[in-house]
Image (cartoon, rainbow, N blue to C red; front, side):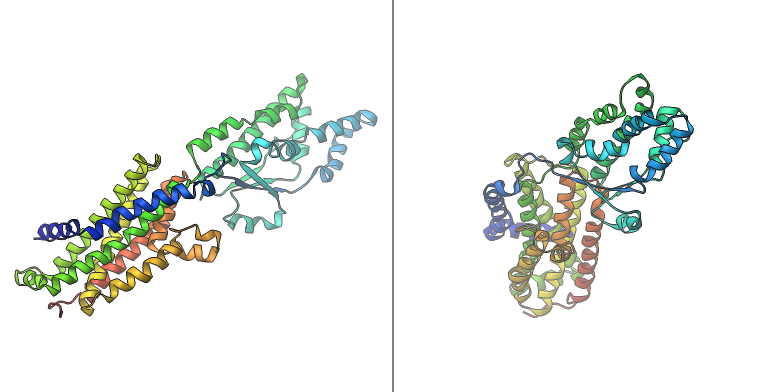
Length: 424
């Protein structure tokens, strides 16, 4: 019986032209128009799609360590012009100086990494910041340890502390890759300076930008207008499904079809379940068609297929739950007022906050945060995160929004749905 109810509701949708036009034709037309019209504004000119933020905390400096370095050199028997020449050479080849003023300031590297210098007192606040992808802490005596090891084969090997923000694996990987190469460079220089190759040459040439290019190609990428508006229209027009199903269900009440279904021994719970499943199926088919259109016609290369499947199914289940709730509310009131308000007001507000029209966070961070808690906004944020190269782990906060919404819709629909028929 459940299968028959679902089949009946699917046939009603297929036989009506208005749902097909709004649910399929309209999003496809808008995607095509918007992605073409705004391509020049949203698409980048080949610059990097991502820039990692590295904070450098240098607990000391060359000036602060110069006294201890000079004292060490004097203890080693150096003095006069020889001492001064060595101090100048050591300052020029200071690994931290090479990192900050040569490697990170190169044109190739600047588009991938933005650096700022902070004080150690701000460390705890920086660790909590979402805008910081990595923190490099250079400890006291780093330069002295380097000179002792590199030129005199004495003391401890120089070390540093690197703290990475694991919320964005791509940006963290970029920083880790750069600093790993830098460390390799100054480690190699400890041996190579003995044969006349300066640390500056070694450290400056070790960083391979090609590695970052490869990392970017496989990781985070730009979001062109075609991808953005395909996702924006996908989540927006899926919200129209519940009102259509609720409207058709109310028509069955007017035509006494619903009463005959109850007389046939079908419980109201079964009927609600059929609306839920139908809504989920229609949403799933709608999203699949839009995604296929984007791939086959617009040439979009959808990545993270497994994560995309999780997102699409989760959103479809939410749409099913919302369909059941709207149907229950309309049966309770006996009018189409609920669906009309939802279509005319709620969908517009949700689409605005969720970013279907444009990236709302560019206008207001607060509105962007609010939009992330709407079902369509959460779904859109999850899909775009995957399409920029993030791992599946980043989508779970958005999925929880959908699952909580699904639970609320199903619970309320069970509570609200009339148990003894509907008054038309």
